[in-house]
Length: 298
Image 1 (cartoon, one colour):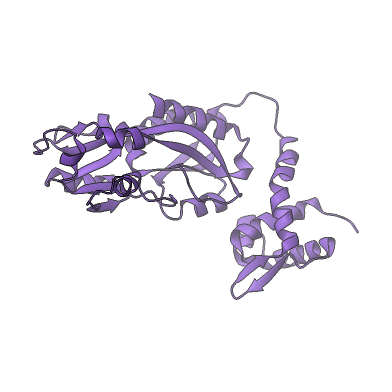
Image 2 (image 1 turned 135 degrees about the horizontal axis):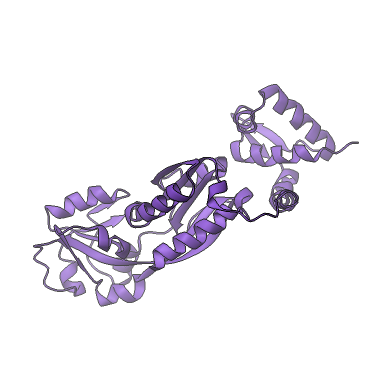
């Protein structure tokens, strides 16, 4: 039997989409073509590969084995076609999506996009907050890259590259009555924290409240930094957020160090860059990793 290696990519696309209609759109072919391709794959592997469960296609055990092995194999094949000439940002074309945690949109997103729009003039960049569908977007859109805090729940379709650590501080209105950053004084006021979509633990602050058995709960959770800042501006709320925001917060607010007890436990949190496995050795992925790491550490 003739083996068509081009069909193997369909297995990964179907695993991502779980529907032949969506797979057809992703591969820019008709749905009947997808059905023919899937039939050939079933014949080649003597296995159903995908079985229908209501409106979704579910992989068989044999198919799961293939899904585990294929990204590396296909990446090796793709690498055979990578040109040897030196790559620059000016080589980029089309559209690129970059997702960032809400608190980092301004301190990281602004300098990053300034540099990208200058050095990659042939690209339209879309920069958005990392939301609940962030991982799914990266799985289905191979022109997307996203930054988020760890630990993050993602599947093996995505590759992860470390970016270093973010650090945290207190933000409160300029004339807030807080006299010091002592823990017993800070917890007298309502606390606001960022929601990290996809983050698989409670916020660090809530974990520490539980650890130190403090009689305290969080007043506001949101993935919208501007919303929380507006609340803080006209109230006694205290916002715990990235210290990268210090330079973009105006005189309506003041910044304080974390209480010593929190400082030793939540002083930093690891960040990572995520994208589809197909972009693992993409030179733009490497460029983003280096540039964002530099911005975070600066």
